[in-house]
Amino acid sequence: MKIAAFDIQHVINQIKCASPPSNKDMHKLLNNLSILLEKNTTKKKSPLESEFNSSVEKLNEAFIDLCFLRKEIVKQFSQEYFDVLNKALVQLKKNKEHANAEKEQTMDLIQWDLKTMNDTSNTMPVVFSKLQKARSIIEDALQKSENKCNDIEGTVEAFFSDV
Image (cartoon, rainbow, N blue to C red; front, top):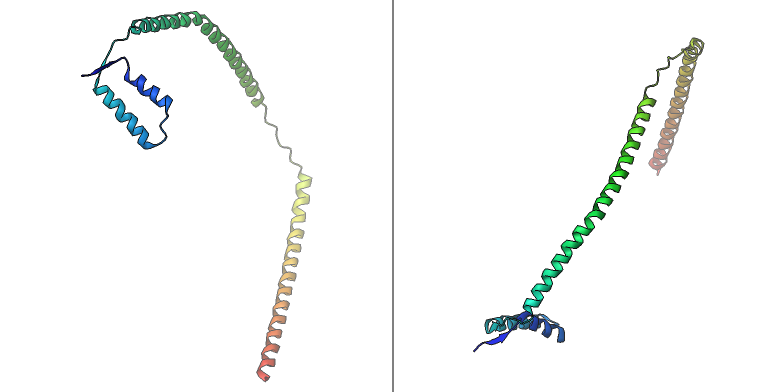
């Protein structure tokens, strides 16, 4: 003999609300209970099901009506958005034209100052001679420091050879 019930999931949800499962075993128990109830019950047609279905249909109709009412608002918003984009596009075109106008400048010819070039070419040998003199001074200093190191090494070796 099977028991008649309107909705098994509603019963299981009521049990879960009254005593929420706290561990894995409780979840398993509730799942097994729902399977057992579904196998051993017959679904009874609810007297309120037709009312529920008609309410859902009314809700869907109201939603569709609302969509059509809001269609005008969407059109108005899209027009405003289009106007803002158009203004931005016009400003970008103006900026591009302004940038292109700035690029069309004439080339200035270079005026060579031959007197300055002559002075520069006369000073170049002087600069190179100073660099060569500095190089020779640095090389002499390195040689002298190297000789001192060699002399110190010789005295150290002579000191230890006597001992």
